Length: 161
Image (tube, rainbow, N blue to C red; front, top):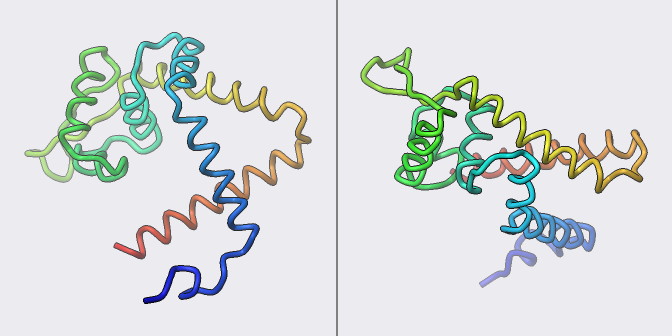
């Protein structure tokens, strides 16, 4: 039986450092205290799951519930509850699917778009403060490399399906 490192060669020390950094960043960004701070800065009383749905809809709406669940890698029932909550607070609504009038898609309302803009602005400000000592070139380089990395991760995940 081969181990992942022996099957594909030894893992580069740089890749190990990247994995460690991603793990730390994921932990820090996913902490409840960080989310509470983000909500306080944005002035919104949403839980983390609702913010994830709000973000996904803002970046790719409108979507069917099943597609939304797939993009978030969660069960459809979880997304249904979050969408119902976003509908109750006026941030989302259901509209007929133009490709199948029997189906529905979820879209953000103008209030939902405004709420997401507030979340994104609060989040971006926090990142800007943390990276205040970085040069504009370093920021451009980081943004480019992070996008490339995420695109490669998505491509790999899709190829494994």
